[in-house]
Length: 230
Length: 295
Ligand SMILES: Nc1ncnc2c1ncn2[C@@H]1O[C@H](COP(=O)(O)OP(=O)(O)OP(=O)(O)O)[C@@H](O)[C@H]1O
Ligand SMILES: [Mg+2]
Image (cartoon, rainbow over all chains, first blue to last red; front, side):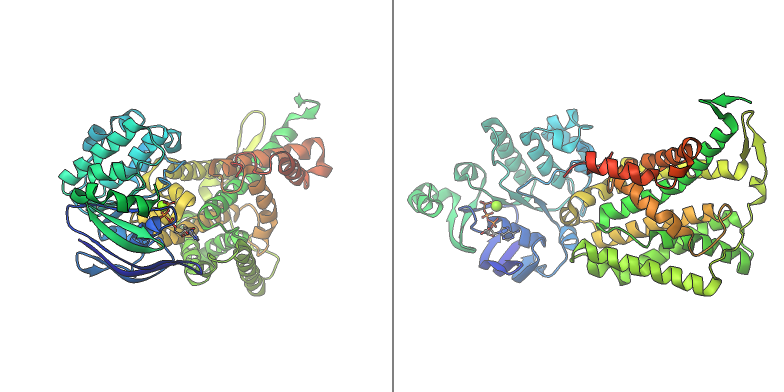
């Protein structure tokens, strides 16, 4: 579904990604693991068109999208849940939820979203940023499920959240996978990643340096500890 | 004679009305500036010139096309708004990546050009624009005579300001606008054509200014300086209300008009400066403005 090859990206003058290669198959949950500053967020932003300068290839179902503007990338069927969550303070919960444009049929409707995230229904009229960290993360995920985009980019959705919330996010990811969504997930927490993912890519210094099948994770623990320095 | 605080009531109400009328124009102009500033992050110095252009287009429609006040009230803002769209597309757009100062300089230059051309063509003396027949005359309110047209100006401005405010606070387009003001790249990544939204925002802000210009045409003569007479005060209003605050610009616009009017009763010598005194005090006590959020 997504085929990234020889991807280079720059913030101004600083060259951050140096030829990133990986792919994601339809219906998979794939993670990008790696230390702080490895370039995971930059990779997601590059796919979404949020990095100023990028070169190489990003193919979505065979279509080159590396040069597109981000709104057109969204319309091509990709949606992002950013690392900083990006909940809008001047919008209430419902308005935050309804903000992303519906780009294709097959997204969840409001009733389904409220079943998945009951908290959001109770807080529908609250200011977006008045929600707890966990609720904001739910909202950031929920609003991209509405759009009908089939490839979801999730950037550290469990960061800084309590274990019960992390479990709920894990259930959500498995649920959306079951519904046929494809997920590219950035994670620091590979124990969490192991509970949801099919495959893991490891990034270092702006490159993908390894790929591990989830089934082979246990056998590769030593290697992974080296990569991640944990 | 009926007195209030030792001043004759008709004088008091008369000045209050004048204050409200000025306030109506302050509110319309500062509202447009606030909307534009929120989205484009530039201070639109051309705003006064575009207000003036609204009055001139209305005047021209009558003079050369025989088209009267009521159609002009709708059509002139559309024409001037379209001109704003043209300015944004061809010029202002290229400055977003630079320091905001460049946007200010460009729009300042545009204001000078537009006003200069108008002066060249029509001179500085000003041309009359008749009050529409339906709004001529005055009503006796018991405590004062209210010229109907002036009452209409205040009501029309209040309604347009409120409708604009509701559109921003309560509609999905308004929600998109507010979100883009906060984080435009993310809104664009959610599938919104933000460059087009920016263009339309500028056009809408400019149309509000032009609407004010048409309202003003029968009160002040239609002259090339009518915008610049207002705009300096309006910048003070914007600073006092809080840069980019929608509600702040409306409330502060009307409020300061009234303050100015009342100052004419109590201490006429200060009426031209009172708004700037308020501005200095607000800047010192609350730099983000009365309604602004400190950043
Ligand atoms: N806006 C920016 N401008 C310049 N450099 C940046 C910017 N954002 C990130 N970087 C740099 O790019 C490199 C990669 O950052 P990135 O955010 O992609 O890492 P990451 O793998 O997501 O890290 P983390 O796990 O901490 O989120 C880092 O060296 C970082 O300092
Ligand atoms: Mg990151």
